[in-house]
Length: 67
Image 1: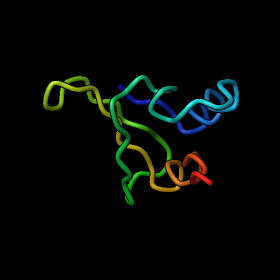
Image 2 (image 1 turned 90 degrees about the vertical axis):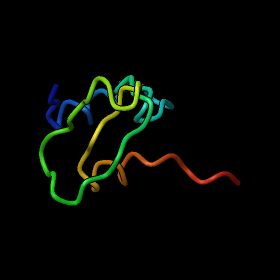
Image 3 (image 1 turned 60 degrees about the vertical axis):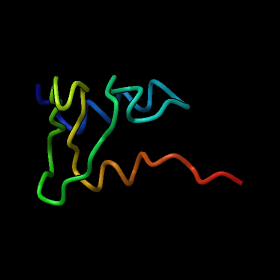
């Protein structure tokens, strides 16, 4: 499955306080330096659902560091 970055940004804005993993309903999000406009969802990688997202998107939606 592929999701446009704009749609992910909209989902994140609507789900304030949730992580990128929660919004995408995946175990983990991996950053890719070569992706720019889509997030790829892979259904069964080692028994888990994961996402591969543009590095800039992952950085933009990185949770704040604990105080």
